Image (cartoon, rainbow, N blue to C red):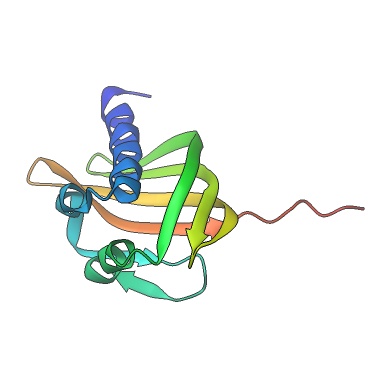
Length: 130
């Protein structure tokens, strides 16, 4: 990975840390105007405001997580897709549940600044047997 790609991977990691430690005000600055997120639970497409509100509500709290298998694709000089796997355990209404997902984030450089424009998380399916 080049310096730009490594920097975007680090920003993606920092965003996760901010989400789960309640530092979402810092996170908000990374989300582009018009940011959209496709929810892995089948709730549909969420705006920047809806995405942030979900974390601020406290209904879901992550106990631990691990981000692995990063890849970065650069369709153009000013766009980057950051792909990775996210695994962890969360609490929803006090009940623990494990989650495993493939994540994709679209970063766009506007006026020299990288912003996240899109995020999608797709649940990992267990391998089929036989």
